[in-house]
Structures are given as C-alpha cells and as structure tokens.
Length: 101
Image (cartoon, rainbow, N blue to C red; front, side, top):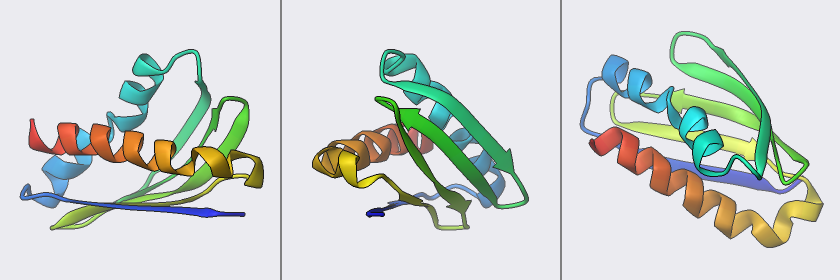
C-alpha cells in the first residue's frame, strides 16, 4: 500500500502539542463529514494508532508527538493514490492550524 508521511514542526512542549493534535481527527470529521467516517484512535504516551475511512477507503497509521514535531505515518489503499496529495495537504494544513493557534 502507498504510504503517507507528514511532519509538522512545532515550538510547544510535547504535552501541549499532544493535547492540541488530539483534536486533529475531530476537526477533519467536522470539516469533511461527508467524506470521513469510522475514526478510531488509541493513544499511548506519545503516539496514537489510528484508522479511518475517507470516501469509503480505509487509511491507517500512527501519529507521533515529539518535543519538536508531530509525525503522521500511514498507509492508504492503491485506489486512493490519485488523492494522496490532497489527503496529505489537508491533514498537514489542519495540523499546522492546531499547533500554531
């Protein structure tokens, strides 16, 4: 499966960054309610294993928070490959907003 790798730098402490980025999937669900569904997240200390459906296709991966950045590493189905750039840009844009508010 094709991979999606997004890195967003931040200047917050790790705990503040984690609390802010935890809102990412809620924000995406709100903004794209007709396209995103079945969001599942399991948070541990500094990372979340996640999955969700985007336009009926499953995306899954891991969201990790460090002292300097947030990284999303995931996989999308081959059928979503034409939308890879849109998916990456949308997630990056929302993550930047959350981490700089």
